[in-house]
Image 1: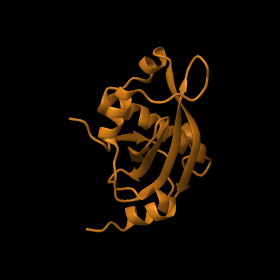
Image 2: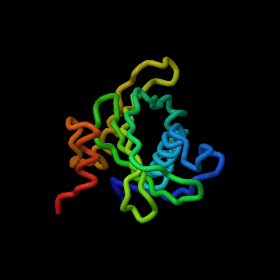
Image 3: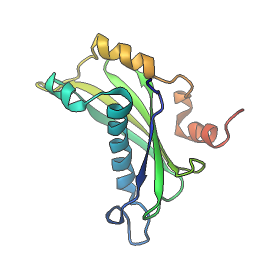
Length: 160
């Protein structure tokens, strides 16, 4: 069964931290992008190498990230990811980093990916097959127009 919100756990490594033992800001991005790639493989059986062989790839057009709480050396964090917007040639993916118990949101990132043709480097529309898959896993309960600030409020104060 496919999940639209897969999650994985990672241990913060010493080499990824600043002298205060906090995860370096740039490494949050690495952790989240690596988690998304893991989620694609594990939850959806999508291997980006196979897409690349078919001449399709996605490049990052933009990252929007907010750091809310530090992640510390040797701490276990939980990273969730979900597709929150889908268009002919772009994707908006939300990635959330929580503490191990998933009660404290440490960071949120929205990444806008553009589909490209590997040979030309130009924008390329998603295939019908990909659109069918992506439509099935896209979540609809995220207020994108409210931006990250509103999203953070909704995550920290969920309505029951």
